[in-house]
Length: 415
Ligand SMILES: *[C@@H]1O[C@H](CO)[C@@H](O)[C@H](O)[C@H]1NC(C)=O
Ligand SMILES: *[C@@H]1O[C@H](CO)[C@@H](O)[C@H](O)[C@H]1NC(C)=O
Image (cartoon, rainbow, N blue to C red; front, top):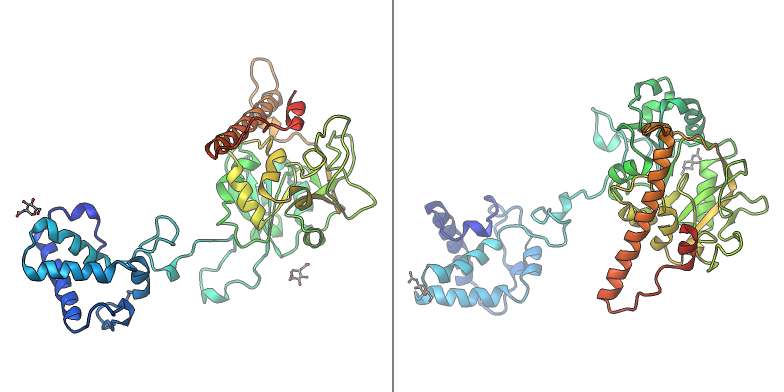
């Protein structure tokens, strides 16, 4: 088949075009002469497969159903009567051409010219060999993905943490300090994927490298900070509990230490999982809404494949700290107060090392972490406004009253 024809080229065909066109006309006319008209369907035409090996007529017929036979008949009548001139014959030629190129609207956007069976729209992080038979590359296909955003100062802690994840996990490290080779001393580092971009945040990496189609191979995705203590944590058991309790978005319970945390994410001793809590007086206008339910924090979230497919779209390219995302996760699952929860059976310690803060910039006599902190808060406000405006715009366009949108909770917490 020749190169696909763009409509822009059709206006004034060159001699070559005319030749190609005549050939097609000849072929098509040939078919039509031998075939009785209104009852034919394209798939019944027996194309010599040596001439058109790559065409599946069912696609073409789908696309032109109801159009092709009648339109061709009309055009053919015009041709036969000899009452055509250049302008009239072009639509016919276009139609004839389009019968012989591939255009499948249900393909991913931009790939409509490809036959569907060759399209690979999803990927994974499986490491392959450079030799041998591709189908024999993988002895194990990890079903889960864990990412840590790391700097070399937390090397010991990350080493301990990674060992808590079995071979059923793909390990992905995002390096924010550019120091990747120093991790080579660990055996597991060889099967890990390392990505390096200086001074970026976990959500920056997640947005760039964890597109839902790229991580489609994984049932669960852990997007974790580097300052977590995993002594009491077993990843396989964690996933069992998440499945058992139908949690699409979860986090391990946090053992209480000096770090100030939300009530919701504190580990409980008397349960496997909890999905709701009581907060300080007045913080929860609605017991089904954050921070009393439908809520986990952003330091150690775990997403199911489906939940992540939604959450990824909500992450903003410029709001790199992800503040406010925790309050909005509930938009992605329904009912959120049942599918978001904290797993007490496998818990962790948040060590609260202000790692990213030290990556900030000292400015006007203030320490680096102050600038980072300030940006976090600013981002939180921007994110809330964007989300609120997006909902308002949508509801207004749909003719729904949006005046009562901002929940009491969020107002109160921001104040
Ligand atoms: C072709 O047909 C159109 C519409 O019938 C007419 O306006 C035009 O002048 C014709 N062109 C030629 C070259 O005959
Ligand atoms: C890895 O997954 C397989 C299949 O689900 C399971 O049989 C095996 O026990 C898992 N490995 C570990 C270390 O839990």
